[in-house]
Structures are given as C-alpha cells and as structure tokens.
Amino acid sequence: MAPPSIVRSALSVFFEYDTPRIVHIRSKKVGVINRFLQLAIISYVIGFAIIYKKGYQDFDDVNSAVTTKLKGVALTNLTDQGINGTRVWDVADYVIPPQENNAFFVMTNVIVTPGQQQDTCLESPSVPDGICSAEKPCVPDTPVINGNGVKTGACKPSPRNSSIEVCEIYAWCPVEKDDKPSKPVLLASQNFTVFIKNNIEFGKFGVKRRNLLEDATDSYLQTCNYNSENKSCPIFQLKTIVEMTGQDYETMALQGGVIQILIQWNCNLDYSVEDCVPEYQFRRLDSNDYKLAKGFNFRYAEPYLEDGVKKRTLIKAYGIRFIVTVEGKAGKFNFVPLFLNIGSGLALLSIATIVCDIVVLYFLKARKFFKEKKYLDVKGADAYEMFDSMKQSAEYESTGQTKPK
Image (cartoon, rainbow, N blue to C red; front, side, top):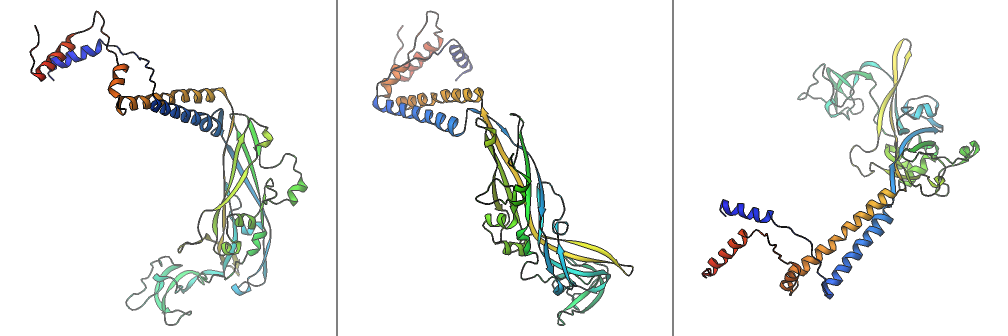
C-alpha cells in the first residue's frame, strides 16, 4: 500500500467510533454453551475461589521461634573397643552441639579410638592412597589422600594384613578404628525424649500462640508423651518420631540419618483463638537405600594429659539429626478480598460472551446471517468518505467494471 493510502486509512480509522450492539440471539446450541460457561465460572468463583480457598479472608504468614531440650541417659560397656569399664552417657555427651537453631543432633552409635598421641605409625590398609609398593613409593612429607596423616617415606607390611604394604605416617597414633559395631552402641537413645517449645505470632492479627496447652501443669509435662491419642503434648520420644516416618529405630541408629519435624499452624481466626493449635508431621529426608555416603556421622576428640603427654580419645559419632521446620498461615474475614474475588468473578463472566461470539460468527452454518445482525455500519452526515471511495474503486478494478460517472 502506497504511503498516501496508509495516511488516508489512518485518517479514516481516526474518524470512526465503535459502540457495543446488543443482539438477542435465540439458538439452542448457543444458549446451552452460554449457560454452561456461566455456570462453570460462577461455580469456580463461589465454590473454589471464595469457599475452598477462603477468598473472603485476609491472610498472614506465621512468625516462629523454636527451642529444644533433651532428656535421657544411657549406659554402655566399651571394653571390646579398648576402653576400660562402663560409661554413662548423658545430655552433655550425646547432644552435639548443645544448642542449634531449629535443629538438634542425638548420637546413636559410636566408634571410639582411645589413647591417640602425636607419633609415627602405619596407615590403615583401607585407605587406597596409603597402600605402597616398589612401583608406588611413599613420597615423604605428602599427606595421605583421605587418610589419617603425612607420609614419612617408609613403606612397611601392614600388621592387619602382612601381604599388603602401607605407608608409615606421622599422625595421631594409633590411627582411627574403622570397624563398625553390628548393633548401635547407644540403642537406649530410643527412649530419650525431646521437649520442643514453639512460640508463634500472626502479627497482622495480633495473635500469639504456643504449642503448649494454656492449662498445662508441671505434672502434665513430666508424664505426657506425644502419640496418636495425645497430640497436644510437646514432648516426643525419639523412637516414636522415627517410627512415624515409617523407619525402624535400630536400623536407622546404626548409621544415622536426617529427620524433619514439621510443625504446621493453619488457623481460621473467624473461630476461637483456642482452636488455633499445631499439627505435627514427621519425614525422613535422606534414604536408607543409598549405596554410598549413607546416614549421618562426624568426628570429635576428647583431649587429655597423661604423664605430661598430650593425648586424645577420638570418637566417630553416628546419629540422627532432627530438623524442626515451622510453617503456616492464619486467615480472618475481610470485606476487601471478598469484593475483589466477586469483582474478578464478574469480569470472568465476559469469557462466556467471547466464546459464544466466536461460535456464532465462525462455526455455525448461519454465521453470515449473524454477522449481518451483529455489525451495523452507520454513516453520519460528516462521515469521512475518502476511504469508502477508494474501496469502491478497488472493487470495480478487481471485477473489470467501469465506474459510473
């Protein structure tokens, strides 16, 4: 199209005005489609958006603080691990570190290497980089990869397996034991209990709650335990938590694991605030089916002096790490979200009109007839006629007719 024609077309559109025209169409097909779409939209707005999703309420997310306190003691006899006598493990021993944010760790199994001191000894044959031969010498002053110390350069037969030669190292000797017990050393930890104290606030509504009954007494806390029949008690036995994840405590205690304790606060403040209580869910975050790096463990040392010599007891601790997560929201009636949802629903009703227009104008057999009834071209006395005259000239040229003079 030539530039003058474009300008004239633009002027023609500029001097036009479109106004809606109501056409009352009597058709069974179109009527059924229209009513069905209107019913579906109204059902969605009222049933889903307003009732199910509580579109008549204003919401606020939970703000939370969690503290934990464990109780329990265990008695072990580690004579077979080179430790004389029995040992009592209390909270200061098996909870490492003593305080964490929204989490706590409980030791369930242990490998103890006592009497270590700075000296030279042979690397464990279970460390690949510690194995040596004439073709693979021990390079002095280089650390053993994933091992226990620094190579001295000597290569000697391993006392555990004389057919294998290992590097001599400078390290904490003797090196760490790698023989895992067949049963958890601290299996008594299944009877330990944890008190989870959770304080929450919905700041928008000025509501504060905690996961402890307002009329609870000291005697109640000393005797209650959370279970399927008493879900209001905030004291949990570790065995109960693990079993609610579908796991066996003894199996999990052997190599450790990670468990999430989920506290959900979903409150409807249109009712009594006393009905705003938490729900607990438990799930294991890692898996017992992993082939490598299964469970959860770490090492720590207990240093001491013996005849003026610095020594230490190395402890490889296996255990369960419990992560406490709090989520939730509260809702309360408010006219603003209600009116917004109603207004959105009324706007959605226009979809029914659009769909029906498409069906009438493009799919029905009588679509030409309906187009004539829907669109009416009205020319005012001051109408811009340039575009119409150009259109008529183009029609005459396309049909080969002569324009009348």
